Image (tube, rainbow, N blue to C red; front, side, top):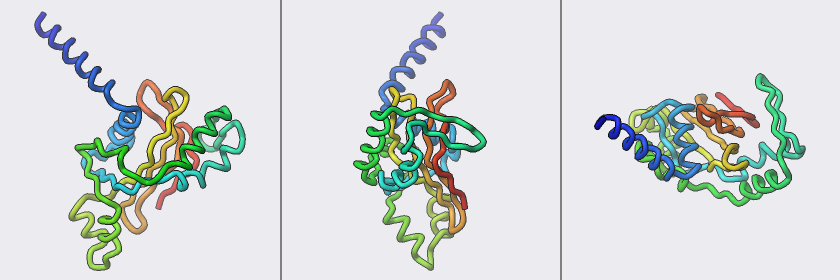
Length: 190
């Protein structure tokens, strides 16, 4: 009986703690823990994609009411004028900053100035970066939520060398299994 009561209290406590997180924190938790799954190899830098970076890739697909990206998944999404307006206005107002990932105690946050100085130094570069930090680093945008926090526009890049990296700009959909990429506007890999 004591074990059952203890189990219930722990479960309630865990649920209460998870409810204290913002939608951005919950999304980024899921993104880093489930979708990236590199655990200790993740470095977030504090130069994050501002809105102008994202706008250049989504303005074309957002011209129509139905966002449809052809590919291996033929997902489509009908956006209301209000949703398109909110997303575009939010993107226009975004400035690069790191405040949306500062809560990651188990993630190392390194400034873009530090990374630029290391990677542009011919005596240091990627070999020194890998020795001092890890294999690579992530640059992420601030998640933009809509439809009562069930959909999210998000961008990330992973850099691991001169010709090593990848990233995408996608609308993610909240599912029973966490956030999953639903429509991808732009993917890159090198």
